[in-house]
Length: 402
Image (cartoon, helix red, strand yellow):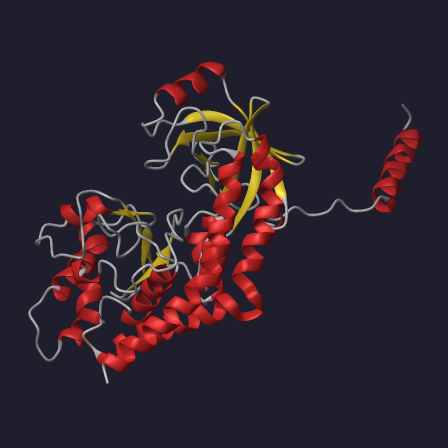
């Protein structure tokens, strides 16, 4: 080939590239588009898939290819995840993109959760909960829905959930230099002081960053938090506790959970559960971040102080009148945010209609399609009745505490 011909070919290709319309950029915002049911395909060795199903209670990673639209991420990692939602038929999954390939990302994300939506027949309770936390000004992971195929076999409707990690912190809080911990449910824990040994706190609060730092740096402030919470009453209890916990944010978080009738959260029936703890750099002060809310919307008449006496942090915080009043105020704001523009009913209806045709095709779901329809109706009933109940109860409580 002559030099003149080579130059001509290069020139022609360059002109075609310049004249062609640019490919649309794919972003995480596209993945978490709440009005789209995505399609995700996983490709995994058949023997590994058999092992994942057989040993679904274990956190064993397997090599997987991950595909969304025209993007295929090779040599990613997949494992089973979850608590009571773990099963072999419709496995709940965690995808790590950088476990086997250092620095590998998907749309800037290091990992994703593929929630099998196993615990709530509506399929939309958790996504509605996360949207409501955002509506109330609290950071929450983004969620969308997908049809998940494993080796080209449809495994049903899943939720795609943004990981709580440094990227989430930067997006939602504007900084990520601090210390992030995922709460791990062990024995029952209601905010008690567990003694001076850091191991008891390390077992319950799993570091999500700064893992190479010493246990003293990571866990001493958490230990000190619960020591101060359980310190005898005196004139400086609140001052000492607020060195380690943003009490107003804590009260706000609990009020939103209780408005949504959550029985597996901070005031859970069996323990504190389903949250992350974050401590900004160069401070000892922590705040809560919401996670895993598929047990909300229990029933409209859910008591506003359910399990309150068992939790040491909440019980002692609301002994302060301004924090008690804040709790009631947030409950009122939740009721107004539910009914303003009929927000919650519209959100449930929108999400339910979006996933309905795909739910009916999901043969691996533990609920019938009729039970799905009934669950949506129960959510709509909650959206209608809960605000009135909460506002009435708040008025009664205020009257009794004048």
